[in-house]
Length: 254
Ligand SMILES: Nc1nc2c(ncn2[C@@H]2O[C@H](COP(=O)(O)OP(=O)(O)OP(=O)(O)O)[C@@H](O)[C@H]2O)c(=O)[nH]1
Ligand SMILES: [Mg+2]
Image (cartoon, rainbow, N blue to C red; front, side):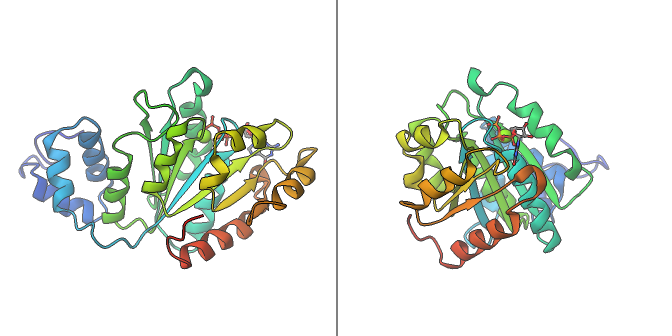
């Protein structure tokens, strides 16, 4: 994708050209820079250096939780809600390549397909490259590229199964932890320290038995617990409100 020339074949693909295109929201240029960053190619870091990323004006939201809790479905719904507000939405799905989550990538693609015709939504998967459940090394840089490209809302999906998950707090402003009821998710999440980094906890699959109990239990000791049925758009507007309210408070630690 990062060939040596432009579509017209005239302009050389220099960091200056790429940076300019990224700032203009050119999707091919954005993808190209992120790929170069993933591959540690100088073109990536040089372009990033030219992007004016000191002004942090995007809302960067981390969505984490155990495999299958409904993170992608939830992000899909949130993306729709933010699109309705006119925001450009970036989604970075950190693809945990562990045996636990094999197939997540395909699932993400299928579920988020409805956005692919929408130029206002940019979706990118990144591999964790052996990091245990944490972030791909270039995730932070990719977020900065999307910020420079004018994506007002950026979601980072990670699988919160490892101690490295704390990584996410360096990249995002608001951490949403998703649990599904009745699977012991909440116990596992507690053990993994996920609730310690959560600003908002979502009990998704609220249509399932046990959802009420899980919500009630968690509400006893966590400040912000919401119920959602991502599959049916349930609880999404409340979640958007909670995210926006947290964003307004700034980067307040949990
Ligand atoms: N019953 C029910 N099922 C849901 C709900 N939300 C998501 N699901 C289903 O749960 C499964 C997993 O959803 P995903 O959104 O892929 O979950 P995820 O957390 O992104 O999964 P990984 O990326 O593999 O960790 C899918 O089959 C969804 O259709 C819900 O609110 N209710
Ligand atoms: Mg997913």
